[in-house]
Length: 160
Image (tube, rainbow, N blue to C red; front, side):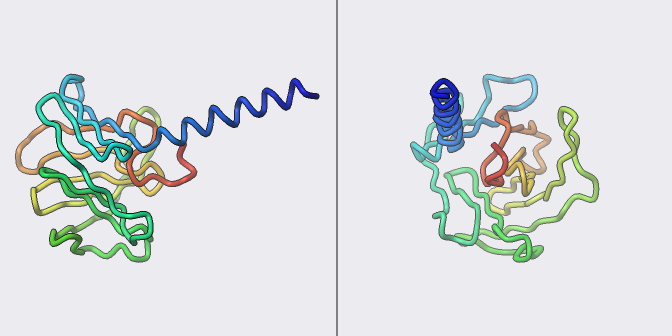
């Protein structure tokens, strides 16, 4: 009996560590692992091979999932019923459109919103379950940065 209790406690503690690590996310363009961008809620930092800076996140009590850096600004209302096509957060305009077809990544169908930030012009791809799954600078034909972890920023509590 004690043996099973010890195994259960070990599994519980290891799952707690995994949840605690869910405050860091890496987004990488396909084929260029050197260009990854790392967001850390723990350290309030954003880093890449070219840039190191500060990142600030919305408070948990706010009605938005959001972050802001010198170069990136992201925001989406937490509640689906509050997702209107346009909103402003921290003086920046955003608009969203739910894509009519889910994206397919590694055998998973993921329903996403395409969220456009207008300072700078960035397109974000957000899933209610998986959180922020990808982004790219608009009009630049630049790379699509894709989430490396199984759950991104602003993901559901069930996604772990």
